[in-house]
Image (cartoon, rainbow, N blue to C red; front, side, top):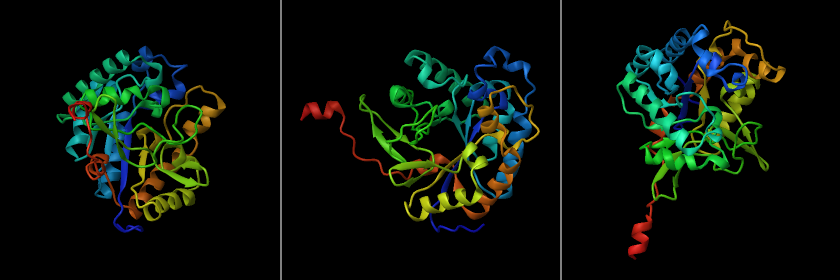
Length: 298
């Protein structure tokens, strides 16, 4: 493999969910009906695993608890291949639609079934639809209380469904009101003028020109000297997936470019070294945190 930007490594991540779990279909598909849809999660995940193995690289898989409960051997297969196993919630609810108590309950249920399936400790979390936004930042305190080392849910962009545009663009430790801390790992963005532009993940990878994606990753690595955090879903390498009824906007966001995803990922993996997010987190400088108790004693 060649790496056009020297020593900078990208963080590669996979949100392990099936095509009918997507938030865009949530108003049409009840969670109670999920079991009635033909699952394509195993074949698509194994296709992703084969892609990673061809490039001898490892990634982070943010696993939906609902999937782990039904496909535990698949999650163990991912872990046995050397990939990091992290949490993507149990029921794919947007965090900003839940109460703190509901979020904690969903989180604990998800982590339990994921760890049982994989046989490893889960340290990372990514919210469905990047739904830790300004009004749900309380979720970071709960994650830290529950022992999570990092979160990868904040997208520092403007979007109709998610985003905190003025959030830091790169991985950083956040000291929380409780005195605990958690490392936040935002998605890849490029700064142009006063705006952050999304890049190198999900629909942005499929819909935007590959020339832009390659430029964005290289700019993050060479100009910002930071790792680009990449993400996609197993259903995005599956052009043959069933077509579900949806609005024109959802049809474009979900189905456009499915036939291009694997080739584009192959190009990225040829040009860049990638690694699991936990590896990057371990290299983020952690400032000396002053807890309330220490301050009070002084």
